[in-house]
Image (cartoon, rainbow, N blue to C red; front, top):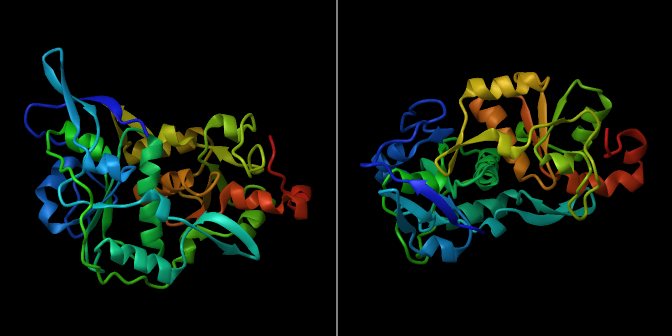
Length: 331
């Protein structure tokens, strides 16, 4: 991962703007800024999902540019943060008799995973991505979505991620992740209303627009010019393309969420009803989580699902008849 970016560090620890204003401690989500996190650092559990353990442990680097102190390498971690290994967030498992990779873990397995991070059931959780791009944030939104699916609500994502934390003038800790006592976090019954299955996606495609399908991938993948391995080219019939990088704005070198009104305007411009029924997808359910987060948590639409298997799973059915009804190809 490339950590080389330049961030202007303001004199003093000025707060970066929150996409939707300030949030109370007992309900900090979906987005908080660096100042809020600093003010409440002793009262929250910070989960940082910014790349490798090496980057988590190394110190950020600073340079002077035009008389101003800037961060040239975004690294380290928010003080007290627990390291989250992105490679362990999703797993390979069987789905309808097919082995599908990068799915949400089973309930018991995910409960063990979260407990190992030291999370308790009553914790206020703040998830910290690297914060340099939209794709950075989708790692955080994916973890957020999985925790919400299994019942956790008291959580937020740091706007601008670690990049904004450093840009605001706050110190980063270094060193490898330490051992932590297991938490008592307990997964509740699954919230199936935020997860879409292959069968539900097939039905949505066949409904010709009754359910809005939103494709979070880059335009070239949406158009079928380039496809990831093990996925079919193009997009689902009737799907709207809302690329992940369109969901954030650059503030210095940190990528920040937009206000709710901006997301509504983007969707309406694309012909999407921001309050209508929505299923988001991508190649493996990662980028789609960012679009789900925006539509569900920031826009406030209670009828948004994420297709966990996405195009990787969908492509497994093309040779079994799916292509004759709802082919994944250029439309």
